[in-house]
Image 1 (cartoon, rainbow, N blue to C red):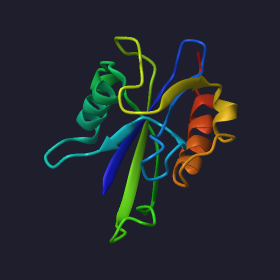
Image 2: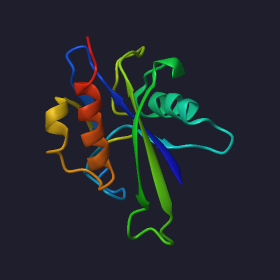
Image 3: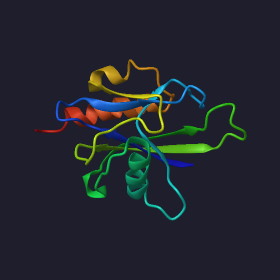
Amino acid sequence: MLVVAVALTGPDGRILMQQRHFSAVHGGLWEFPGGKVEIGETPENAAVRELEEELAVRIDPAALEPVSFASGLTAQGTAPRRPLVILLYACGAWAGTPHAREAEAIAWHPPTAICDLRMPPLDYPLADALCGFLAGKTI
């Protein structure tokens, strides 16, 4: 299963994270917004669609910067477990004000605080990669 995730980066450098619905797999954990890539869809177009659905923001696919990926298996309790690849993008430009349409909550966090959040296992290496990516950017 191919999944996209997007780290929206605010002007102050904080990153938007969303909290999964408590009734969902990994309920209550924090994650980067995003979701499954549909058949015939590019990862960038999936990111655009998912952020509109989840946060009510519009992004230009050209504003997406590839950061990293993580791979593993879908969560236990989902039968059968399947291979999972998450592609992480960073995005510093969007239209609209993010709000939680499909999550318990959203919150802005400094990049260094993201790894302290309770997250699904594959989000930790993505958070580490994001911190390295952001540290290497020049303003």
